[in-house]
Length: 582
Figure 1: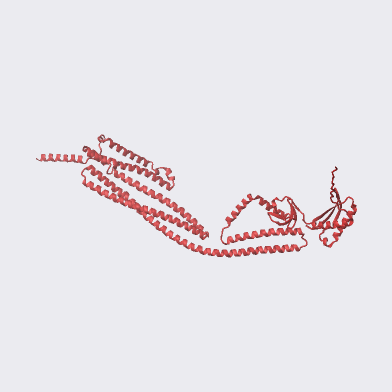
Figure 2: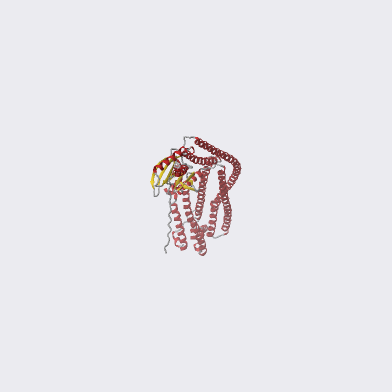
C-alpha cells in the first residue's frame, strides 16, 4: 500500500513537472527552435538586429569620441550632439515600431492560429520582454533617455542663442548708455528710448507668443499623460481578464512600457514645460515693467524737450538779435573807417588822382569781402550758440566748392584775373579805357567783371578773364595831340611862328594854365599830305583833360590862322557839265 502511494506521488510529481514545463517553459532557447520560426518572424528579428547594429555603430562614432569635437564652439558641440541623438532616436523608434506594430501582433496571431507553437512563441516573446538586451522595456527606457537628452539639448541651444542675443543687446545698450553720458541731447535720448520701447514691445509679443505656445504644449502633455494613464488602466484590466499567457504577457509588457514612458518621459517633459512657462511669465512681466519705465522716461523727456525747445527759441531769438546787431555794427564801423580813410586820401596832396581811384576800387572790394566774412562768421556763431552742428554744412560747402571749381573754371579765371588787375593798377574807377575794341569810362570794378560806359551811353560789361589788352587813356597823365594841315602856298616859318604864339597864349591863360602840366610845344612839320602840310602841337595834361585842351587849341588855331591869312585846305569838287552837239 505504501509502495502504491509512493508510486502515485512519484507519477503525480512527474506529471506536475511536465505540466509546469509545458505551461512555463524555460527562458533558454534550444538550438532546434530556429527551425520552427516562420520566415516572416525571422525577417522581423533580422531587421531588429540590423537596427540594433546601426544604433551600436552610432554609439561607436559618437561625437564625444573624436578629438576634433573638443575644438568646436559650445553651441556647435550642442548642435552636433543634437544631430547625433536625432539619428539615434529615429533608429530606436524604428526598432520600437517594429516590435509593437509587427512582431508582437504577429506572435499573438500565430499563437492563435497554431496552438502547438505557443511554448516556442512564449519563449521568443520572453526575449523581447523583461530585462534582456532585446527587451522592449529597455528599448523604451533608451528612447526616453534620448528624447529627454534631445529636449535638453534644444533648450540649451535656445538658451545660448538667447544669451548671445541678450549679450549683444547688453553691449549695444552699454554703448548707447555711454553715448548718453557724453552729453547726448534730449532728442537723441528720446529717439533711443523709443527704439528701446519698440524692442521691449517686440520682445513682449515674442514672449507672450512663446508663453501661449508653452501653455498649449502644457495642455497637450497633460492630455497625453491622462491618455497614457487611461491606456495603462485598460491594459491592466486586459491582463486580469485574459487567460492566454502570450496575450497576458503582451498586455502586461505594453502596460509596463506605457508606465515607463509616462514616468520617465511624459511627466519630466511636462515639468520642463512648466519650468519654461514660469520663465516666460517672468520675462513677460519684466518686459511689461520695462515698457512702463520706458514710457515714463519718454514722457519725462518730452516735457524736458518742450521746456528746452522754449528755452532754445528764446535763446535763439536773443542770439540772432545780438548777431544782427554786431554784424550791422561791424559793417557800419567798416564803412565809416573806409569813408574816413578815403576822405583823408582825397585831402592828401601827395597821392595822385590815379592812386586815389585805385584806393577807392580796393576799398569797395575789401568792404564787400568784410561784409561777406562778417555775415559768415555771424551765421556760424549763431549756429554754434543754438547748438546746431554746422560741420555737415561746411563739408557740403567744401563739396559744392569743389564741384564749382571743376564746373565753373571760367568763373575762377575771371576772379583770379580781377584780383591781379586790382593789384597791378592797370586801371581804376573813372579811367577812360579801351578793351576789346570798345572804349569808355570805367564805372565799376569787381573780382569777376569790369563795367565801362562809352561816350554814347552804352554800358559794356566784360569778364576779367577775357581781357587780353587794356588801353588806359587816363593813367597818371595824358597828352593833348593837335594835328593841323595848311596849304602848300603858305610859308612854313610863318605857320610855325603862329602855332608857337598860340601855345604861349594858352599857357599864360589862367583858365587853362591849371590844365597844363608843361608848356605846350609846336613840333613843326609832321608830314606832307596829298593836299596839305601837317603840323603837330603837343601838350601834357592831367588825366582826362587832354580832350578839353585839344578842343581849345583847335579854336585858337583857327582864329589865329584866319587873322594871319593862313589857309586850311579842304577838298574841292569840280563839276563838269558836258553838252551834246547836234
